[in-house]
Structure formats: structure tokens, C-alpha cells
Image 1: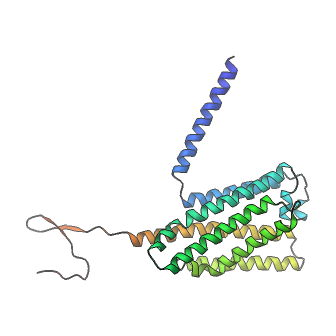
Image 2: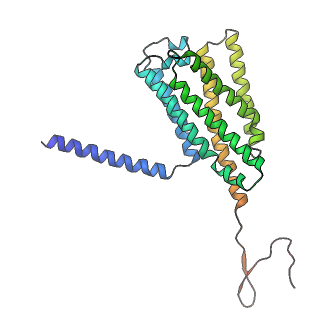
Image 3: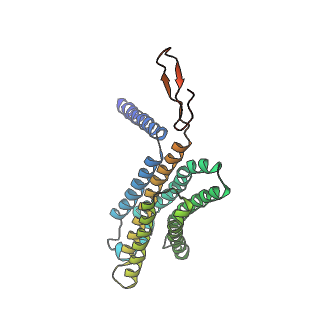
Amino acid sequence: MLFPFASALIVGVVGAVSVYFAYLSAVNMNIYRLAALLAVFLSMGVLSSMLTAEDPLWWQKNLSALGMGSTLSGFAFNFTLIIGGLMVTIVASFATRELEIAAASKSPKSRRRVRLLQSGLVLMGILLACVGLFPVDENLAVHNTVASGMVTVFAALIISMAYLVPAISRAFVVLGFVFLGVIVGAAVAFAQGYYNLTATELIAAFLIFSWLIILIRNLGAVDADHLDEARVPHPRYRRTDTAGIPTIAPSKGAPVDR
């Protein structure tokens, strides 16, 4: 009778500790940790699907072949894409929240830019989830449409990034065009027979999600810049030489009474 009780006690304690640490992690969650969590989740999910694939020659077909069938590999691949897509939509709202606050007091054009950026990121997340919802062996047309649509939205965001977020780093804008150029080059190499489809898809997927994670971190930096600009400086105090009464120091360039 002691063994079931001891087992239940251990499971309960482990569960309670896990919930406690999960709570602490959620309370202290920020945009940088969320981006790292997204990267780890996508990487581990796809890697698990590769390692458990029943077909050792899946790489000769395409990356989406991992999601075919009702095997553990297919479930892991499709589940990763669906949850990853949901995470991208959440991150889109999280990453642009401070930009929305900063744009609320500015022109309608600024607010429209933020909405376009947020809509593009949300659309990428929805399309990513749809790639997992519609496996290639069950609905080829829809699968290819949503996968191509995600790449199209990615390209549109790169091209318009300098317009959507004027304060973003110019190095990041250039990096986006470099990533896009590499993807186009990989597609051309595939058309010429140098790469197979799996290699081309892996290159595109790696660069798209790398760009997305770097974008999230850059948006966090832009948010911090906005907050710093909006911060009201506290008045500086100094003591007089005689009475010792604190007085507000004049700002630079202000006239001083003599």
C-alpha cells in the first residue's frame, strides 16, 4: 500500500514544482525570452521529427514529407508547425505592443505602419500553422499554397521593413535583403539541379525563422528607444553655498538670474 502512495506523492511534488517554475518563467517572460523559446521549440520539434522518421530516405523527397502519415514523426512535425504558428501570432502582438503605444500619439500614418507590420507577422503565423494543418499527402494544393504564401509575406515584409519601422537598424534591413537573396539563389540552384527540394526548403525555413527571431529582438530594441525618448527627466538638484537649500539646477541654455 505504501508504493502507490509514495508514487502519487512523488508525482504530486514534481508536478507542483514544475508548475511553480512554469509560473515564474511566465511572470518573468519578455520579448527576448519569447523569441528564444520560439527558436528552441521549432528546432527541437523538427529535429525530433527527423530522428523518428520511419522513411530513412525522406530527405530525397521534400521537407514536408516529415509530416506525411499518422506516425510519430508526422505528428511531431505537424504539431510543431501548428504550435509554432500560434506562437508567431502571439509574438507578433507582443513585439509590436510598445510600437502601438508609441504610434498612438502620432500621425495616422504611423499607426497604419504598425498595423501593417503586425498583420504581416500574424499572417505568417497563420500560414505556418496551416502548413501543419494541411499535410502534403492529404491536401497538396492547400499545403503548397500556404507554404508559398508564407514565403511571399516574408519577402514583402523584408522589402517594406524600412518603411514600416523607420527606426529599425539599417544593418537589419540589409540583412533581410541578404537572406532573401540567398533564398532566391537556392531556388535557382534547385531549378538548375544543384540542390534537391529538401535542401532548398531547409535553407528557406532556416533563414525565414532566423530573420523572424532577429526581427523580434530588433523590435524590442526599437521599443526601448521609444520608451527612453518618452521618459521624463527628473529635475536635478544642487545645494547653494550658503543656506544649503536644494534648488533646481537650470537646464542647459536656460537664462540664469543673477
